[in-house]
Image (cartoon, rainbow, N blue to C red; front, side, top):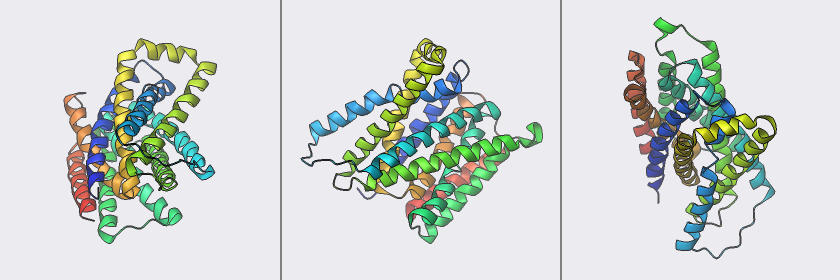
Length: 296
C-alpha cells in the first residue's frame, strides 16, 4: 500500500493526458461549459457503479457519517474543479496543447505552498527540491515558441489561475479524505469521487438546462467524443483521489507532472504540433522531479 500511490498517480496522469486531448478536440464544436460538463456527465454513473462493485467485492460493515466539514470540502472542491477545467479549455485556444497543459501544471507548486502554509502539511527537503524542479519545468514549458508567437500575459494568467483552482481542488479532496479515516483507502476515495463528480454534474446540468440548452444539444451531437472524455476523466479522478488519500497532495501532483510527458507525445504525434527546444528541457526536468519525489 505504501507505494501504490505511485501506480495510481501514473494511471491518473496517463488517462488525464488523453482526457485533455479529447477535450481539446471537443472544444472545436462545443463551448467551454459544454466541454467542462463532458468531463462529468458520464463519469457520474461510472462512479456510482464503482462504489457498488467495490462494496460487493470488499464489503465494509461501518456506518458512514458525512460531516459538515466533509460537504464543505466537496462543494468548494467541485466548484474549483469546474473553474479549473473551464480555464484549461480556454488555454487550448490561447497556445498549443502541450504548452497549455504545462502552464496548468503550476498546480503542484501552488498545492505545496498552500498545503504547508494553510493546512500544516509537511514536505522533506528532497520533496521540496522535486516540487521546485517541477516549477522550473513549468516555466520552461510556458516559454513555448516565443520567438514566433510572442509572450502572452493572458496565457500565463489563465494557466496560473487554472493551476490554482486545481490545487485548491486537490487539497480539499485530501481534507475530505481525512474526514473518512474510519474507512479503508479505496472506499474513502470511492465516496469522495462519487460526491465530487455527482455535485459537479448536477450543478452544470442545472445551469445549462436553464441558460444554454443548445450546449446540451451540441454535446449530444458529439456523443462518442463526450463518452471518451468522461471515461478518461473517471479513471483519472479515481487515480488522483486514491493517490491523494494515501500520500500528500504536493508529492502526488509533482509526480503527476509526468502527465506532461504524455501530453507532449500526444501533441507531437496526435495533433502534429511542433515543440520548442525549451519543451524538451522542461520534459527532462519533469522526469527528474518525478524521480526525486518518489525517493522523498
